[in-house]
Length: 168
Image 1: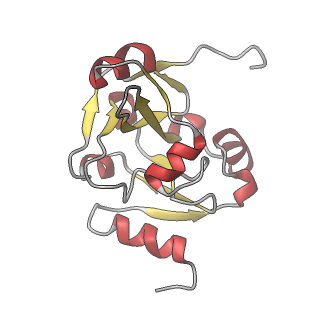
Image 2 (image 1 turned 90 degrees about the vertical axis):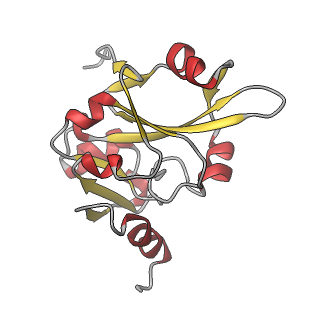
Image 3 (image 1 turned 60 degrees about the vertical axis):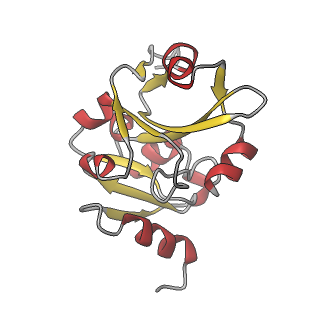
């Protein structure tokens, strides 16, 4: 055990899943674009964990892992999988479901029973950089680590490449 409870929780969640590296980062640089620019990572290797919500009297949630260079298809694919109108969960909902702040959401150690869907494009990368459960940590690992998670589903077409931004 270290004197960093966030690191300890992350190490516990990663135990037995396969090789990974913990990468400390400045919490002010945890958002994907700032992180990649500052630390020299390719945004195409960055995979974000995004919580979505299916609307209704009893909302249902899922966690989606998509490349930073892609856009999650909430209106078609997520809606179809949840069977109801869907949207991105708010930062407050995300924190309530995962215990993590936006910029640090990780797929590791999520509550049992929360569906985890990984876009198939993530699995084609040699390595990926994921949130580490807090804005101070990232996880660098081969994408196969995601397939080791219980109940994870690899979903073709969960996301699609984002169009180039006007300032690119």
